[in-house]
Image 1 (cartoon, one colour):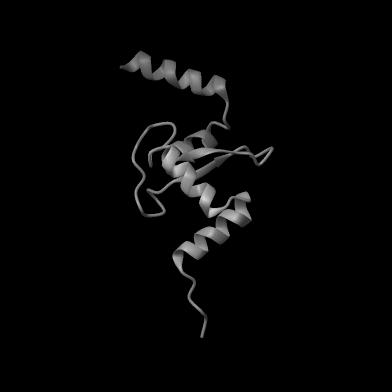
Image 2 (cartoon, one colour):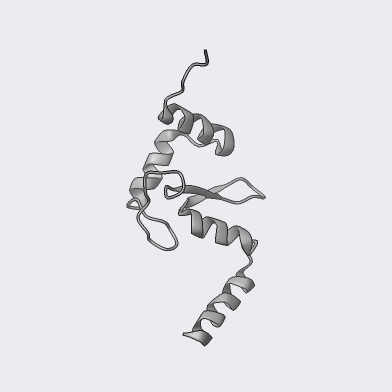
Length: 96
């Protein structure tokens, strides 16, 4: 029978493998951001879909901040392109 892994142990392992990030650093980031997304300021939930996601540079691997899934995915969809982000802002302004 397979041994069950505690959720915090799984989190610790995933952070180390994916981002070379310790659980202590993860918790420090959450505290320093007041448990909120660095972009939209929404409070993080406790489930994987609503909890913090590590934002990092895909070229260098450098960890930036913690984001909600919506902001993290949005950055990915626009390929972190500042011009596209600015165009999106202008588009929203036009229709508000």
